[in-house]
Amino acid sequence: MANPAALISPTLATTLCIFHTSLYVGVLYLFPSTRPRAPINPSDIQRHNDPNYIRLRSRAVTFATITSLLVTLCIVKNATGLSWLVAQEEMGLWPKVGLWGWLKEVGMVMGLVWWLFMGSLWERFVVGEGWRWGELRQDWEKVRYSWVGWKNIVVGPVTEELVFRAAMVPLHVLAGRSFGSIVWTTPLFFGIGHFHHLYEFYLRNPARLALGVIQTLFQFAYTTMFGWFAVFVFLRTGCVWTVILVHAFCNYIGLPTFGRIHNQYEGVVWGRWVDYVLWAGHVAGLMGFYKMLWPLTEGREPLMRI
Figure 1 (cartoon, rainbow, N blue to C red):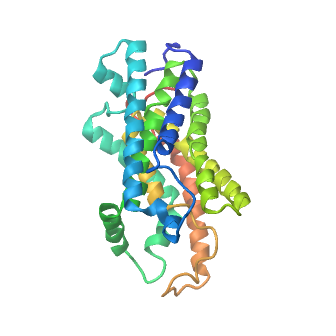
Figure 2: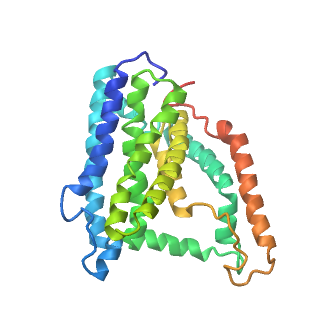
Figure 3: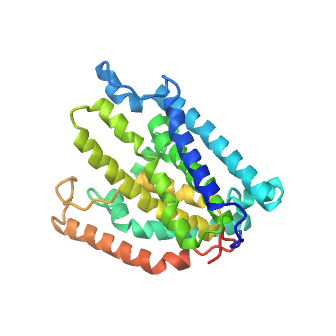
């Protein structure tokens, strides 16, 4: 989609984004089996990690995801007059550059993200008793055999990116909005979509509402920041599956550690130098990310040209 004149109204695009967000979150509260509840017995405290609970909620958000994609697909097809298949490509659901071209772009984008998380990767696989590649096998087994891992690495990234990127961003492109406007504003729906976690926190911790508000605002901040990058990459590469892989990796690696870590691992022989190397990795990661952001996210078939 190369900067078309407005084919739909910005109001329609925004309204549909509100619909997609409400559906994705609201479907979790439609049925008692997927709705969070106040703990009745000690086992309910960890209900969010219960395999059956995760499986039911995964089905619910899958239904919401398919519905949102179909709604946006119909809008794109009717507004552009394209075939169903080409309309899907214009939504970023399939790479236009072929498998090998897409893998090359994935490698570039993931290289950028790995560089950004240089410090975190060093901490995860090097600090302590040396190279800990065995953790990769353990983490892979968690994804294969654990519903918690499946939720965090597969279901969450796939459904969230399909809804908040593939089903939303093309609408704003059709509405004729600028590249910068789309990058800065559409991730707000992604951040707001996490506000319901405050309600879930309150049900489990009714006496700690202030802490829940702080956690929710912090989550809103970092999910929105990630959304800025995700939308940027999506618009530049034109394929949502690239962003899904980035999202899965970020969920896997977690937020960076900024405190002292030299006393958290066995076998550390560098003492406090471990902390200095970690911070140097964070700084180098940020500098490299800033310098290589544009070159490494340049796709041959972007969703929107600048």
